[in-house]
Length: 261
Image 1 (cartoon, rainbow, N blue to C red):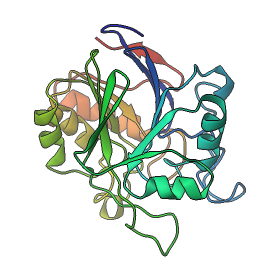
Image 2 (spheres, rainbow, N blue to C red; image 1 turned 135 degrees about the horizontal axis):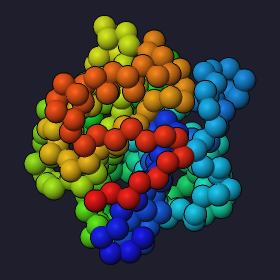
Image 3 (cartoon, helix red, strand yellow; image 1 turned 90 degrees about the vertical axis):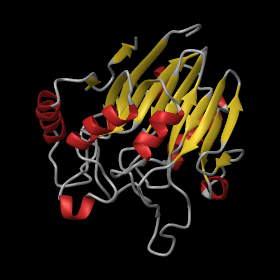
């Protein structure tokens, strides 16, 4: 899409297709059946991706927020690299991990670092989370959110994150944020999930702290990664929105696209 047009499509989990400023962008792409180091163990997806892989447009840019298996999916990244050769941007340490799996050329950024990609500027921003792919590598790689700056406006992708002052800081630095992509799932039980995952009510608070014009809910309805059920995040989001005067936080169906004002 050219000019000021911006379109977002929820594919599944934290995988979204962004179309802005002539670029096709994927966030944390996963088309695999399970987010796992092996194909036969781990939580199986509840539903197929909202867009079949073969129906994707040519992808120019891939954003990978951290190294958890439901966000850095090696099999999907291989397919994208073989088909489209997109630029991949990720936090520190993850390019080396990808290279060990034959996925070369990823650009690593620290928090607040930025890189130009065509008409876009991609900035790595803080998140309250952690990283690990095994019992021996916890927090050895960085995790983050990203802001994608373009003539069509700023898009904030939170990745996975708990609550923190970073939402307000990001909102002030990148004001105005035209679109925020905020996780709402895998938040129960709170005693365990709270440090690393916001709940639906906090996603609404994050939307307000960011000053985003529009937010879209992500990270729900695909994999059972917490005690919240398949529909519970959406139910809790509806209650939270009603309690806050129904700010513009959208819950798209899987495969649904929306033009963003």
